[in-house]
Image (cartoon, rainbow, N blue to C red; front, top):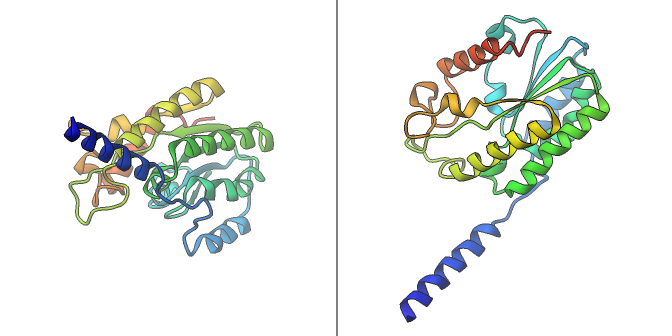
Length: 225
C-alpha cells in the first residue's frame, strides 16, 4: 500500500510540475520587429494570397514554389501564435483574398497551454472576419515531428499536444465554417512521426516536403479564385 501511495505521489507531483512549466506570451525572436517593419513597407493588394506562420512557412519562396505571383510569404522563424496576433493587422489591412495559417509548434515547444493556443486561433478567426470580411481563411494542421533526429529539439516528444490541437482545429474550422487543410496526415509516416523523406532535422521541411505541400494545395484547388 505504501508503495502504491508513493508512486501515486510521484505521478501527481510530475503532473503538477508539467502543467506549471513557465511560459511567456510576450516572446518574440530577436529579428521579429525588423521583419514585421519590412512586411509593412510592402504594397498590399486584394488579390494577395498570404502564407502566415513560423519558420516552416518562411522556409521557401512561395512565389516560385506555387508559380503564383499573388502569393506572399509572411512567415517569421520561431514565431508563436501570440506573435501572429500582434502582427495580424499587417495582413488584414490589405484585405487579401486568402490567408493560409500554420502556427503552434513553437507555442508547444515553449509550454504554452493547449487551451491558449486554441484561444489564439479563435481570435485570429474573429479578427480576420471583422477586419477583412471577404478574406477566405485556411487553417493548416500542425505538422508531425520526428524525435529520431539529433540534436533533440524542444518540439520533440510532445506529439499528444500536436494531435489534440489538430483535432480541436478541425472542430473549430467546422464550427466557424472555414477551410481546414490536414497537412499532418499527409506528412506522417507509418510510425505517425514526420516522414524522414520530408525533413532534414525532424522539424523543418526539405525540398521534397515543400513539393508535397504545394501538391496538396494544388490538388485541393485552394489557390483558385
